[in-house]
Length: 366
Ligand code: SAH
Ligand code: SF4
Image 1 (cartoon, rainbow, N blue to C red):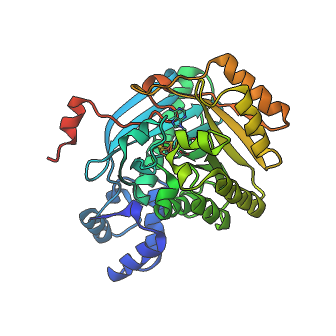
Image 2 (cartoon, rainbow, N blue to C red; image 1 turned 60 degrees about the vertical axis):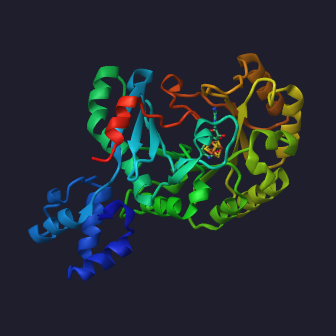
Image 3 (cartoon, rainbow, N blue to C red; image 1 turned 120 degrees about the vertical axis):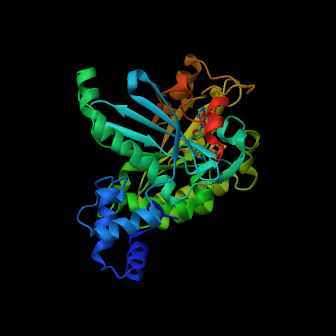
């Protein structure tokens, strides 16, 4: 059965013309899906009864099955575990920042093939790619949640809460550039004025450093922000943390990033996970500063979020501050990311989508 979220507007128009429906019907349905957030074609009352019935019989609106929802930070962080068709699992996180920001962290793959040694998703291996419709559905779920719940959250907390998503980060499970086509299709419908209508500047994609993807993004017409997971300033150290560095080393990566900044004039964020005793010494900070000096960039330090069973340690506060000071002293903009949802394993790199035994029963095909 066709999942309507998987179909771009032109293909929907083509499908409906085979049903002898006029072209504007597709735009009406599109607006129901992405603006009114309809979940049932029977609510699309500006369509004929016949068309509504046919849509209900021959298409679905979404395919994700909600397995579990957890909250932290007094309800300002929410994590959902989803089952995809075929029973792969992914997670999505909403982070509300009163008064006016709400960010959704989206998964682009179930698992990940890149095997970074510090990442829970990497431990799973790759189960499968997420489709464009499945990417969209993660976003629309939380948009619906905010529309419905912002007023009551506001009352509870006595401060303003945004009633819509303001930012998207493609930093959940998976490597977006390893699923570039489907990811980009979703970005287009999210950005489309007739679709979800979120500005490309409010979206950020994070890559492990797939240089073809970085160059491809640089050549796209839409200005999505780029974050690059660097984590080490030399090849020996980076390869020990990230196997991808053996395919695309730091010199290749920096060339691609320069291509992106030259082409777009947009600042790149280098993400840098701090692991005690591995990549967090003052000497390494000096090396990092020298590597990125003169680039149109910002460095974002992320004290490592614990993953059970990994023989690694989160850098202590003083080491983080010392590292930041060295980078800043070289004239480079550098911040420390304040993490959300560590206690519900919703923070960067903690998404492992592990269902409990009881939840597994719900995952069995009926
Ligand atoms: N695959 C992409 C995007 C998802 S990971 C990428 O690697 O960039 C999002 C960010 O979280 C990346 O910068 C990643 O390196 C970082 N990360 C992974 N595991 C982490 C952990 N345990 N603690 C903190 N950050 C982590
Ligand atoms: Fe994959 Fe990113 Fe995790 Fe590396 S950090 S294993 S690329 S999700």
